[in-house]
Amino acid sequence: MFIQKFIHRKIPDRLIYSPQKHSYVMYSLSEGRQLGTMKATPMLLKEGNSFYRNKIPILSMYINDLKAFTKRSKVGSDFIKFVKILSRQENCEGRVHLLAYNTDNPGKPPHTFYRKMGFATTSPSENKILDDAIKNNTSIPADMCLGTTMFLKA
Image 1 (cartoon, rainbow, N blue to C red):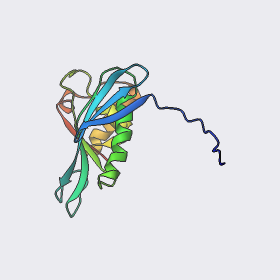
Image 2 (image 1 turned 120 degrees about the horizontal axis):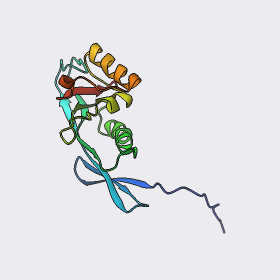
Image 3 (image 1 turned 90 degrees about the vertical axis):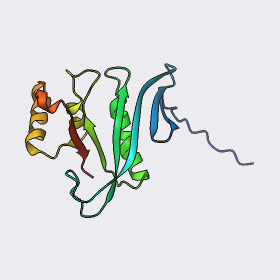
Image 4 (image 1 turned 45 degrees about the horizontal axis):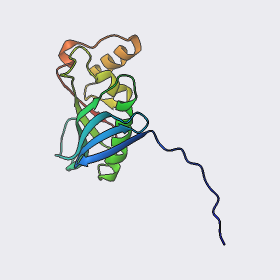
């Protein structure tokens, strides 16, 4: 008789599931509640787009909605880690892009969060503004808060 050695594995506290195509929910098993939602869709980018500067059409995951229901809970960063993996599974080769804005709380735009997660804009001067805002813990200019296209360098 063969007896396999028991391997203790920690059960993750968070579960990300997809109730419908391209829609994801993060759920806390220990708290028994939703922590956040995200919509991410593979999108065909035509040649010459401003962020990947590709010469042929390519796929990139587009995050068109990301909401964390609790502050400082790492929900956003866990979703970004998840979408990086999802990007590879969907043949997007690690490419992810989004439009950074926050209609729920205009005074607290998510640009610096996305910058900390590795996203960039197409403008070196905007990237410097974001880097300085992170370094000095200051706000970003109001005109950037209206919506800034950001992408992960693949």
